[in-house]
Image (cartoon, helix red, strand yellow):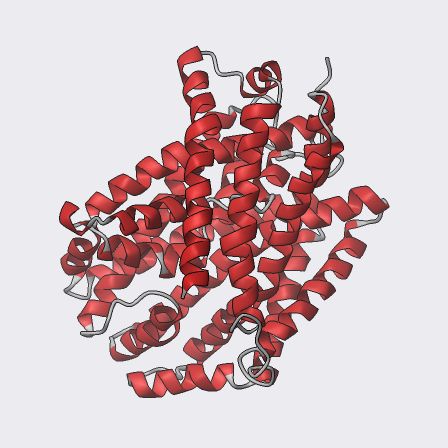
Length: 455
């Protein structure tokens, strides 16, 4: 029987899919969040718990999403509908695809704003704006950027154009070509920065911060953090892996491929930490997480060090590439659906959805300045979009996918698509996707929602 292919095209080989999916998984969180939460929550002990969470939660759900995509060979919405029809189920399962595509679109609208900050810092680093700058000066630069909607608009617009320029090329001329160039560039930049961190004289201090084995620092809150990050770091719940799975060659092993992606994603995060923290500690600065580390602490550190302008520039290029590859995957699910639904060229789909995402991003920009007085539940547009997607839509999407694949899809279809020769490994995955993963994601969903709303 001839292999069914997606109308959008197919990855040339398995490794292109690995590069594209790793690009989706590797984002800003790998660089500004994971290294910090590792160091603060038991180091090596946290890494072990995190890897266990990846194996029991992240990997099983990612396998399920890729499986649905390759089985359906369409956008996440239509792949859910097609696989549901195959199992004699209601078309309403397509709503799970809708939830993921909408979440990806919403994340893109504010993610592109943050990525615009990164582009601004690339230009500032190239211009030498942070050479010999202190924390007060760099902090003022960041605050001035947030207070300047015109400047943020420019860089937000540039980033949206960069993303759409890739997506308009389709699977082979767009997504695949970008992955072949951007991901090796990301790995090379990361290794260059790691080499630079060796010259700081504080490399072992950074390694100790990351990998000190301290089980006593591993609280239940840390375990929940590891569980949550293992889910979010692999771009689950947004339809990206269903979309990318639709373009995956039939002969490629889903299970083995997903494991490689999970390992690469974790390695990038850990190497980023080994590259970043020696630079921070060399300047006696705080190893804080989040925007403060990215846009204040590190520019100060680079500004004080020999060769810092060059390597600071390379660092922000690295971050920009990570943001670019992630943002591409955020929009692919909705663009694929528009092409299928309305039978239009990708240029029209990218232009229309790109303008909508750009427009929603304007509200996020305004929430830092001209619209800062307008809030809902005490949050501006930027924070509200972040809260709704990260705490509600993504975990709910992942939970529904695990329930759908584990409890509703017919087992013969799963066995056929996964083609796992050893029944032990199939049964291990089946156990995880039916019981362990949904229970864990439900816990993430409930506890995060409680923690956010109880404040």
